[in-house]
Image 1 (tube, rainbow, N blue to C red):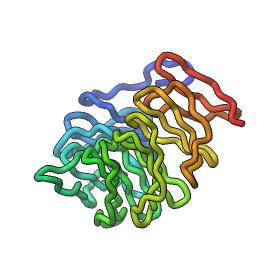
Image 2 (cartoon, rainbow, N blue to C red):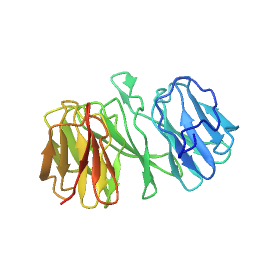
Image 3 (tube, rainbow, N blue to C red):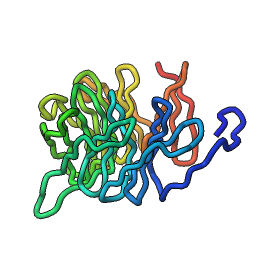
Length: 246
């Protein structure tokens, strides 16, 4: 759409989709419930390539270098060539009591690794170039949000109601914070503060080094916070707040 006028510039039909589009290098990447990953020309909407996974694609894609990474409900994380959609590797969730987790989380790529949460309650780290599993860490509940990467830490919440700081290299838990409610959305790091919300409708701001609470606010539910030049904006259940960072 035209950003100034809101008029439609092009449209391309895909299946039902929850994916936030990723725009990079002149392409728009998105997935759908039919299991497809699409790369569309950002100017025309023409399909550059598509790749089919074995299950619904619900999260977004992450781009690092010449690869895009995407999770699927077929229990796998995929690394694809960003320009062609060629499969580079496919990583798997671990077996657990005869079943495996699915990937709703949007992956995060950093430090030569790909980090992603799973419905089996674990956070996974895979080698970015090989897909080799480096570590997994249990959180006690579904992990739907995308990992936030900060200062060699992985910051992520869980449906267990706990928010974690995990060592990016080893997966060891550095600290955890009891948020008294399931955490579904992704965390946001702005400066030296990490923000997240719970499904009980409260937003927290923590010091990411220690897990100490900086403040909390009685609204917000999923991924609520974005930054502007002079303030932050918090999406509540029925209200939008402009807040000054002090």
